[in-house]
Length: 457
Ligand SMILES: [Zn+2]
Image (tube, rainbow, N blue to C red; front, side):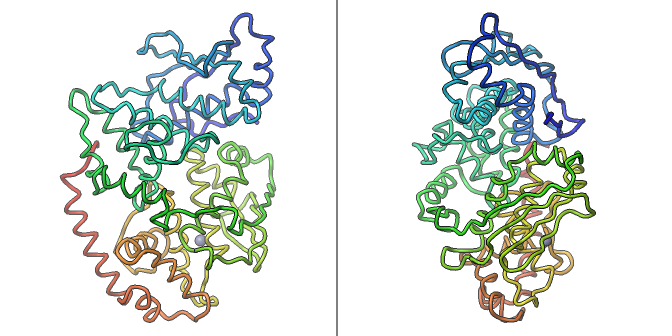
């Protein structure tokens, strides 16, 4: 499959490769070329960096050409000896290393290239910026794009700026917090625009409302299991269904884009785990779903879920995949998380209002750090308008009440008919109308506070 540029408006440089003189017979060459086309690996790595670190307005266009040189050298990879300011950059990749990692060649190649390309583009020159933070950002991109190598250690090291995967997992956790989407974009933007000012850790507080030390402490707790709302423990105990994939039109451009952006099995698994994580415990997780079939086909709309108790089908529009090509991976994952919620959620025997059903699905998408850029918090209209309106409202309820409030709300709808008064009072001691008006006050106060704190543009 040829690489599909995510968007023609993105400043993708010219991507080429060559094999170093005298190395054409090296066994690493064959392993590399069998695993992935070099241009495709480079493209994926460039796109991963663009998606993870830059807003549309900030996309860098100072690089015109990136050449990958496959070469017999020690180590893993390094940036070639061209001037750092040059618009043409070279990445030298060790053929020995290709051989050593042959069992997972494509993933490791893309993962390493993501890291190198971070450094190709990186223009943080301020020396007060902690080096562990910069290293951590590079590994964060790798993690976010789904190329974390199996040997990475999730255990947090000394402090937030310890670097590499330790900092990467921390940054990823920040991004996935409620309302956290876009935080790393802004953090990176801040670092880029420092010029001769000193790096100030207060930026974390400005962006998240909490100091970096508080965040680090919460993060360490969540990893070490003291905060059981964000960790699933032993994954093998969860009832992961069998996944099927059906593509009804392989000629459709959307099919290429889809398969270029995600690995279907891993994407579905991630989406299922998001549902389990935010709505269920091992005791409450529904065990009736045996298979989930993802159907990619030409149709109107975005996606929907059908099926009976044990076999679910998620139909996903190939036209929509194409429309969202510039944010393919993020949008696909977000939509899959939403649809998978429908595969499992309780609907009070069909009496739950549609707006709450959709709101819970988008609440999980939001909590999982997958809110799309256009979503807005709003307290206009009804609380059960659905989608992002209700999703953000539920998110606020969750943040301001006992943990797992929304998961309890969902659980209550397993066996009873829907009764708005009883339902919300049962889990929050307040009526939904009182909650909605409190939420309105909260948004107003937040708006007033936000003005002088804005960062970047
Ligand atoms: Zn839905």
